Image (tube, rainbow, N blue to C red; front, side):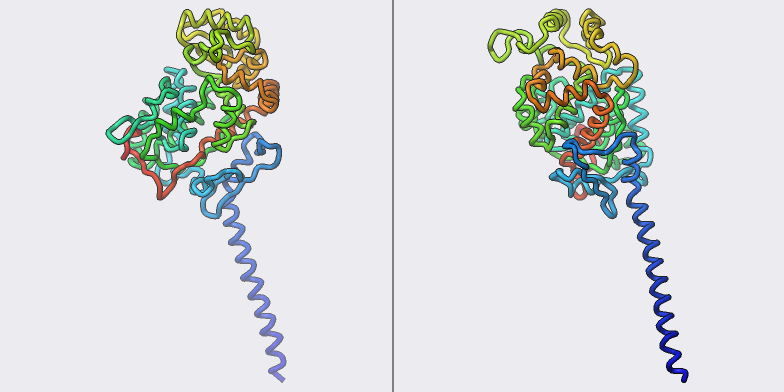
Length: 401
């Protein structure tokens, strides 16, 4: 009589045991998911929505062991997936703080270097990816990108070396120059009044420089719209993202040599650009006769030497941009709408239906621009990155390890 009772009891015990195993496994998976989604949740707590530039939902993914988002259109997602948020949390926990504190000191002593650092990162990432190749000096085996004509006026190299030397004291041989560049650009955008955005780190430094490619493929200030679109498209950027990134021209210094043809001899015609506002054309001619460069900020254009009628003329257009940091990018797009783009390539954005549409959108909607600019800079910072086992960690940013 005992035998028939044993089977139901055994079945019940097995059922209870299975339930306990299932519960334990569910708890384990939940904990893992919570850990793996920390970065995803962090991204979604940024005060702007994550959306794609094409209007549909952007494809974000978080890998099991390496927390990282990726754009589904990216061609180098394998390298990107090895980047992590707060990559140096154990190996150099103060790395980003050192970058940021150094830039704050730079901003107080020479704020003109802030836009220069944004440009420096763009010129690095746009040519063969964000590998700090732009920082390498000439030697017996390297033709430096610094000597490429489009890079002739770049500044900020000493700031990157200063940051690197401080990081080498704190944690020798750990933080790459490639990461320093994109972090410095991100913090420079914020100091200039632009949006702060999250960045993943873990990039490694390249051992080559690409002077010839930089000469041929960096967007020219004299390029027409089709050339600019083609250049950005080769790097995976659509027209909306292109217009967004060019909004960084809102700040910095533009040397007159980069737009003199725009003023006097467009495409060999011995005439100025017909799309340019006539009054503004005369103001630029006057200013370039007095100095060799113009400084640009969210509150207007000035000569490199001092304030002038040029600044006053521009402030009539964008007085509201003085009121708050939300003016980042506004001057640039509103100037294009009025035929007052300084560079020929910039004013060309008004010649295409799509590009003109986004110029109009950003000129009237600063919040949209800041959202899109943050996303575009995140994407730019991930172009063709080197991660383990590729690349190296330089001890000095100007020399291969």
